[in-house]
Image 1 (cartoon, protein in one colour):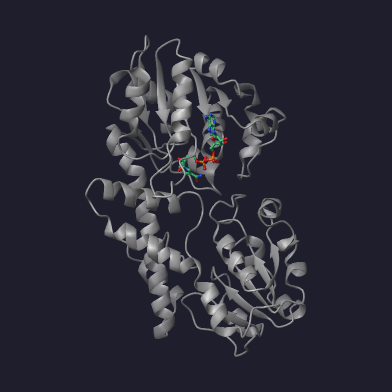
Image 2: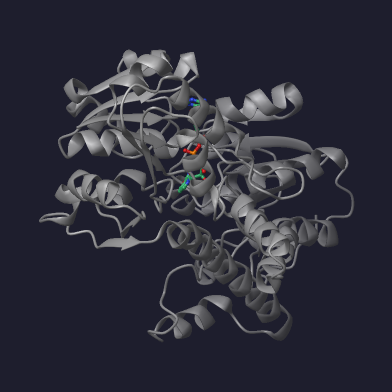
Length: 439
Ligand SMILES: NC(=O)c1ccc[n+]([C@@H]2O[C@H](COP(=O)([O-])OP(=O)(O)OC[C@H]3O[C@@H](n4cnc5c(N)ncnc54)[C@H](O)[C@@H]3O)[C@@H](O)[C@H]2O)c1
């Protein structure tokens, strides 16, 4: 079976590499020449743990091209993995998906299965199928196969998925998809394989992502209330996690979610509700609560720092979460924008994305590839991303290098007892403030 993957970003490239790893031959198609050239040279254009090794291990089964027609003609199955960013009204922009569909239609030479892996609103597969089959000599079978990987553990998530969801309404593609994924359903992977109708598969992705986003927004609100009432969110979430009905994941508190998925998927779900006359009040509440939470650390700064103008600030961690080089919709961006607006001098540190950040901010901020250098002579530091390098940083060094050791920690990286011992002034989320100093 010849497979093509259209769009080799975080999802597409991981899909291609993992399908190759379970024995398939895959041609990767992207309109971005730089990405394809980098892949042809043997280098992954994105960072994901284990991706480089798998690219190399499976190089004989992987090929790369910008020549859409040739790739789509050769393929029996085409995975569509292009982005679906937000439009200004919150709806998912499907232009990138339909650009691929138009190219597939133009290249039509035999019957094919087209698999929509991009996150798309319910009903999109129907529209895609209609578009492909209208006045076509060949038959296109359209399948919804939403992706649940998390950036930072994408390869592991794809090879050992919590579940594979396949949404299809016909026997032909049911058989093809079963064969394609069969190795992942067997030892050692043993992934649950769930066959559902297409609409339910499309809905499953939004329903899951919105539930996780809601969990984050909820626990952050509880954290804010903990601060006001003297409770400690870490103790509270620990007690909650023993309840099997709640579980222990997505109870980490902080400055809320950023990134390319939750923000756009909450907006798109809200829009889908509105346009179907079914207001999604919890989704709307998630969006609002998270927006507020994204700037909550700055609220703490502004209520404790007399004047930001001319203050030297270290911003530690820039990517939207650890172990990824993705800056899309990162919370650090919204915070740095405000710091600059108020006239602060900003030093930034990140172990992976300094170059990407440079493309956005040029010489408006100063870039450091060690925490030691970034915090030197700073008035205070703000922690945005819980990279291991930041979590394991020797707390005494804040006192050693900074003008004043004042930390605003947006990810609750440190233990309060350790902070006390290191004599640091420390503000975190949903916990007591440590130390008395003002900036
Ligand atoms: N990133 C995640 O963690 C994640 C997880 C699950 C689902 N998703 C969903 O998967 C989809 C892709 O997300 P992503 O983060 O991988 O996006 P991405 O932006 O990293 O990758 C998209 C790729 O598509 C390419 N592209 C655009 N138009 C094209 C065309 N006409 N032909 C071929 N290639 C084209 C782009 O150049 C880019 O390389 C989105 O719908 C997203 O919501 C993402």
